[in-house]
Amino acid sequence: MRKFRYILALLCTVAVFAACKKSSNSNFDVAAQLAADTTAIRAYIVKNNISAIKHESGIFYQIINPGTGNVEYKPSTLITAHYAGRILGNTSTFDTTEGGAPREFPLGGVIAGWQIGIPLIQKGGTIRIIIPSYYGYGNRGTGPIPPNSILDFNISLTDVY
Image (spheres, helix red, strand yellow):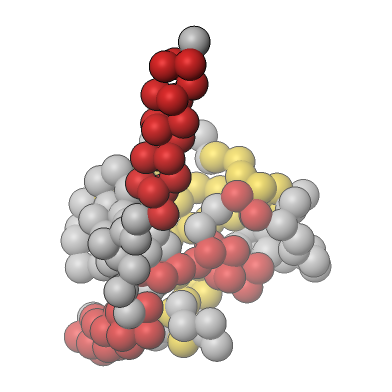
């Protein structure tokens, strides 16, 4: 029994030191990445003649249709939307509701870029949001989205409640 406790204590100690190890991303410069993303977005919107506006947060948006209503958005606000998401400059989508039913999300459960952009429109509205990586999936990426990807979404709100 004493040997078991010794091994258990050793394993716990190793686990604590492993958890404290700095990740390879600890030296990641968020400000530099945001500046690089902003430069790339500006070049893209100029080249493609997109009338996007830079929000104070750093995302870029183009309101195609403001929609109607007067919802005061909260993290618990449910939205139902059709959308298509691409990596900036790539014509293929990594996620879309095209050809299917709209999806429902709590506003507080989506990426920060959506949390900033969605409240700029109301039910029935359509917006294009170009999201610097910091407000998307950052330097970790996810699934088919590589780290530091600038995201480009077209979103149509079908319902807000």
